Amino acid sequence: MHALVTGGAGFIGSHLCEALLARGDRVTALDDLSTGSLENVSGAQDDDNFQLVVGSILDETLVDKLVERADVVYHLAAAVGVSLIVEHPLESMRTNIKGTEIVFDMAGRYRKKTLVTSTSEIYGKNAEGPLKEEDDRILGSPLKSRWSYSTAKALDEILAYIYFKEKRLPTVIVRLFNTIGPRQTGHYGMVVPRFVGQALAGEPITVYGTGAQSRCFLCVHDAVEAMIGLMETPAAEGAVVNIGSSSEITIEALAQRVIEIVGSDSPIEHIPYDQAYEEGFEDMERRVPDCTRARRLVGFEPKYALDEIIKMILESLQGR
Image 1 (cartoon, rainbow, N blue to C red):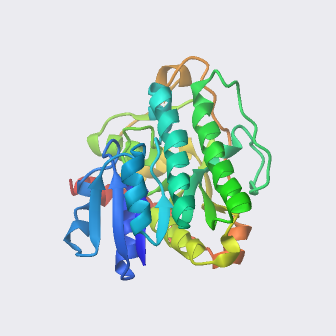
Image 2: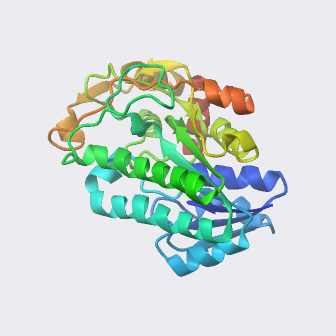
Image 3: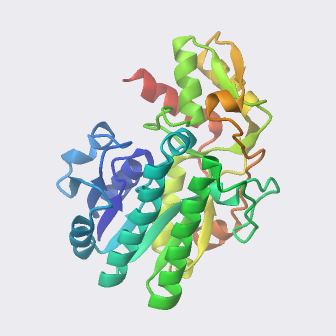
């Protein structure tokens, strides 16, 4: 198979490229390197079956050419991270909406099966759980940039579903819940690498809000394996599938866990949301996935525990 991976030099995209190459697939990665990096794909670059194309998913001519040459498309390119969305809302919206529209236009033109990565942000402030794929979205005001990412990714999902229903294009929608691992950066609000980096430097661990908010963290290797499996499962076509861990932890407890694993004496410092992001910022108090559908479709079960993943991130940061 020849796979096109948009966002292929990013955190998740680079791991996906490596997993596909390990299977013997040919891989073309498209990335504008705005949040991805050449370092992320340095290992893949040695493989004759890998090609990195530096460019934007907003470039219709380029995307047309790359989709035509591919057998399947993994669409991961997006503006990601709460900080980036809040700081650059217009650029983020253009990338996440217009970029996906272009990818699906070309995928529909050439009849190429396409997987699009969505996000647990879809559920907004719905603090019930575990969250099923059909559960309601509860969002704040559209004037709060915090919810623009959720809205953009919802439009991505709608596009994928419409192409499946109206155009009979095989599409798969994956909702990722707090995927973490090596190569993830803390620059855009990603909490675990930020905590590990602060602990390594002996700096205060900055917990936004009360720290009572809870999340479930999944290793990128588990996420990538599930994505590839879903692309090879006909029953997943036209479906939305949650991919995440069921192991829940508060952000305060996560900070303590990082301090213990790193062996740091960093103190924990609480930062109000309006200082960390913007005035009136709203967060999700709880985010826990129901992955029954993923288990049924591909036998999904996370292999890596949180402590293992934190150690992977620690070793990755120490090696830089």
